[in-house]
Length: 335
Image (cartoon, rainbow, N blue to C red; front, side, top):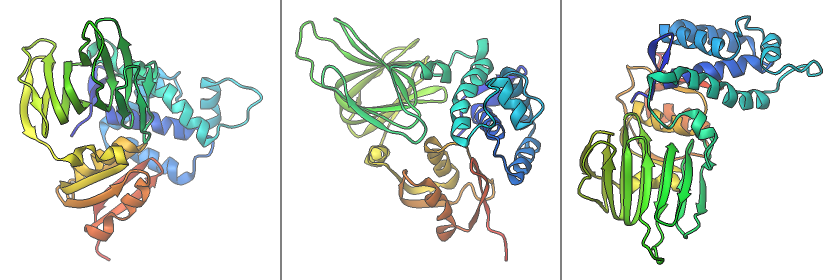
């Protein structure tokens, strides 16, 4: 599955590639880049024209960092004559700043996709990559934020509104006891999901909002289309801004992330890596030759490096750690 599309030099580019360029910039700015990482960075740039285009663009929107020297890059972004180097931790903090500027520039006026990184940074509640969070809202509703998610809370005297800026949430709505009755709504880029005494999840995906219901029911209301019949317990559904998607059966496995787990049942390897990438910084690449291999099991989200390194135990693949932030899964080489 491709990620959201952004624009660089007037041409569409996958958001995942844009983020890879930002992560490479942060790595080079750390002042601790190894020769192997510099080689891998050059290989990444040469691997696809979109990579080079993304790199040139992230340079331009982050201050014209073309010298590729760690010290020069540091001075361009954070002038500090008394500081001699930037640590890895600081470079990752800078990554958020660079990504916000870079991705905002990529989106520009060419995209109306609402949950962008800049808005997420200003949201009422948010989680970083690999982080999950649970809390109670003012009415007693329980809210679980998945990795890389952000929401705004907009409670008034007439409604309970949750704006899903980015990512995925699981909601256990509290019963409304006051008057007037306030419906519980989740607003996304594509419309509203109204809870009807419900435990359910809402996820922003590329071009659509996905809903899965554990208990109760949810009514989907696209921005420019008619409301759908309700999605009931054990079902999933979705909507674009123009209409709704067919309902389908879902397994409770879909909510395993709340327990810090990813459950896979004969999942294609590419889809599996795409899911893991929601909980880990950097790129998880997969060669076409092995993308269709099936994987099953229960995998802890708290130790994704161990999960990745265990793949050759169950599949005929090799895992190449090109850098800390770039992992490639390839067909196993004959030895």
